[in-house]
Length: 116
Image 1: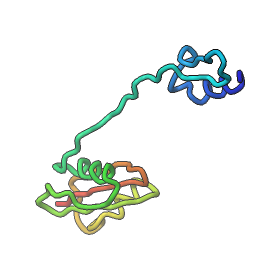
Image 2: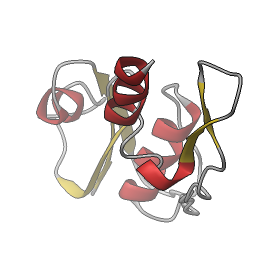
Image 3: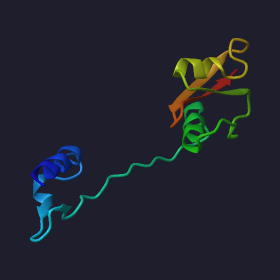
């Protein structure tokens, strides 16, 4: 039982402390009294910049244009690196970039490049 309690504290150390784990009378299993509140972070992205478009793509998990640009825009994806995501954008190497944005998603990198 002590080994299990130590095991739990080791793996749950970032979630709870030793004061949060108790062993009730008549039970051989440790019980967590309470868990602290989990912080969550959210952000609002805008399609007015290339970075905003990249963040929108990353949060959605798929590649696509989000509008908000009057000029040429290319979007790209790579599971390897952010540089490859930029190089995979439409018109890369053919037009002059004026705004580049990259964001990391769950499965890879999403990029947006806006051109002159």
